[in-house]
Figure 1 (cartoon, rainbow, N blue to C red):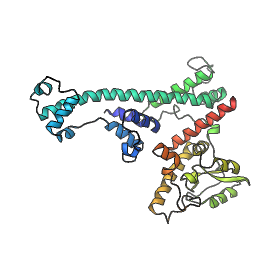
Figure 2: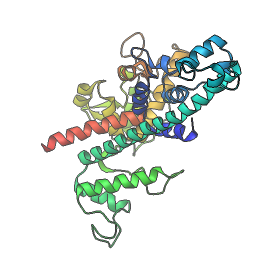
Figure 3: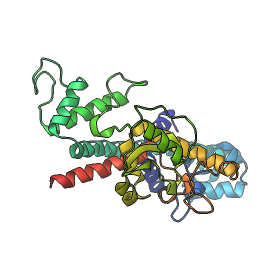
Figure 4: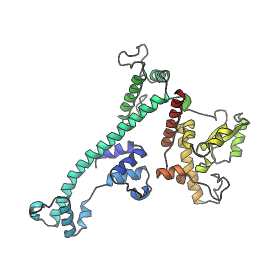
Length: 357
């Protein structure tokens, strides 16, 4: 399958790849992802399984008997009823001729497969594009979008709204301008300066450690609490807050501490909304939290007695590990930082929309 197909698959989200794998029969019903897409059922494994699906090499055919090859050729319609083998598999209808006929037919199927795969990928891309628009509709006011348009050059200084390629100062037009900008950015081989990865600012960012320096080491909440107290960043009614909850395999490390938030909020959210905590923390901080959670899991599995402190077991004999927590088990693989962040963003968008009704 052409290299561009692999590149297209790389750009897809895990959810989109899983849907594609299910649609194309790579993922079997009631069979785990790690079995259908070995060895681990992760993004790269799903991509390789999709690329390998339906591909057959000459070496595979060489190992088959003549009888098996004839049966395969008949099943695939290469051998026509009432037509001799030399005619269907020229020049002599022997084993090598049957193999060449099968490979030739397979190449035609590969061409169709490529077209089909491209079509599926394009449909998923269109779906993802519409989801971007939906999120921006729900998340931002016209004033928000107008300010971003000025910041990123969609609105040029001195040019009025709706003139010389500048969109009208209406929500639908601003949304479309951002989506067009995003599509152009994705066509660059490298980073397109100022064209993609628009920083939405304000409520998307949250930082609590500006006034202090925190050691880059595993530390229990008591030590981290001391850091916050020394920086004047902890109030009496606040709790130390994990981005990924301890009960979901979140480690005791500054990379996974969100700082201090209201104690009542902390108790009410529990382990059920890690994605929302990821959204509050921001994508960069979430990437650090997920990376550290996987590292802590590996350390604990390597030597539980030595690394028992890296993940709080919450009074149980063993801690929950990130890769086996409820939401990753349900997903069939570890959700990425971007996927957790996007889930939180969508949850926040729904809350904002509900508040406007």
